[in-house]
Length: 157
Image 1 (cartoon, helix red, strand yellow):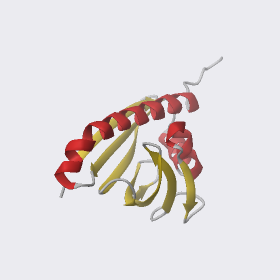
Image 2: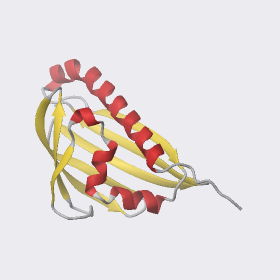
Image 3: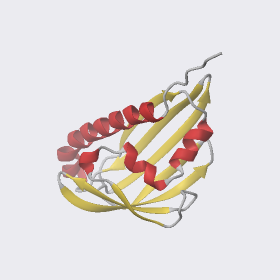
Image 4: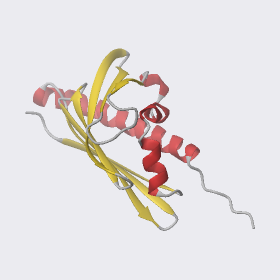
């Protein structure tokens, strides 16, 4: 079995957790948060809105090679967190917890990923640097898009 890797990302957004949770409940919104060069698109969902046990099938390109990724929502706590796990895809194992923490003036959005690369220790040795770089780029894109979608509100009196 290959090594377990982690990746974490955190961002403050000036909106309530309920607003963000509603956004994440719509499967098509995930493509808004994914870099266009990945060719990411939602192919099928078992529910029109994401809920506990929803399965989502995505089409994505890795190094230009199209592949199918199937994920299932394993945990679902409205306005607080949800976790998706890979059923089929590019990783040997993958789990992604999305946490929405209410704080003064908005929400801290935390992403905690755990994954194993295919190919055992050799796959981990060869692929880890590329995967970390790809995750950093993907989550930077995601944070930039979230700031565009949920900008600070101007208040006029």
